[in-house]
Length: 291
Image (cartoon, rainbow, N blue to C red; front, side, top):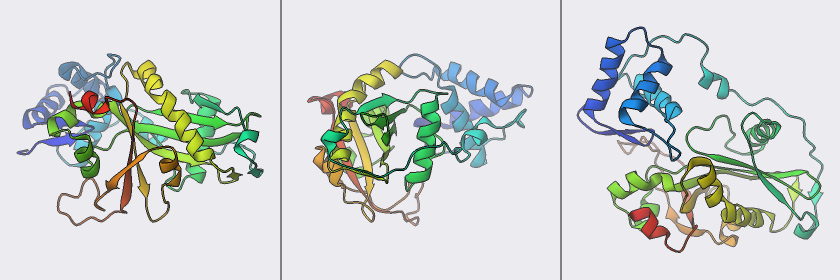
């Protein structure tokens, strides 16, 4: 492999791929989990809290196998990823119309969705059924939020996850070079899903929820992963939406994508053009992202 690849946000050089191949050749009795754990140890690949990024390593190995660069041992059991990627099961929920003023829903409750909780099952169900992109699985650092009104009725969901690896409009506006972007991308998070439930018609609710999330996500990220985030990003499909709620919540429109996929090295794969929005979380966000 002559060129450097970026997989799961990590640069892979030729020697990295050779290391993986040598581990596979020398330890034929190792399972896939054992290999991913060993890679984390040798690369000292950890998250902000010092925990090994085992799931990221497993996904990296799968991507290399799909690219026919390595051959992993046969699975010894059912794929946990396959289980997570199934369409979430239905969870009963009310769909009665909610039409009122924002003040009639307050105080709103915005809560973090915890793993293995009833809220997680409801969150997955709502996003998969009512968000136009659907929802099955989330990898990497992420935080899920479920929003309820003063009576406990769900009114919306939000998911923050890994930032886009590259985005010309964003990268130019931040002013970081490639090295700074690759080193500091984890201090930026992408609002990959935002949903106000379709039976909820409340003026200004969406922008109010976005503003509420912006006030707390930095601290929530610090508490969960041991490091803050300095800015939020999102990509709005301009064929479907005008981005009104983001602009009303003081997000900045930086430009638009080029209508290409992340794997479009030959400039032949077309994708929907999306408007790029960013929300700084501190006055010094550029300095914090470019150190």
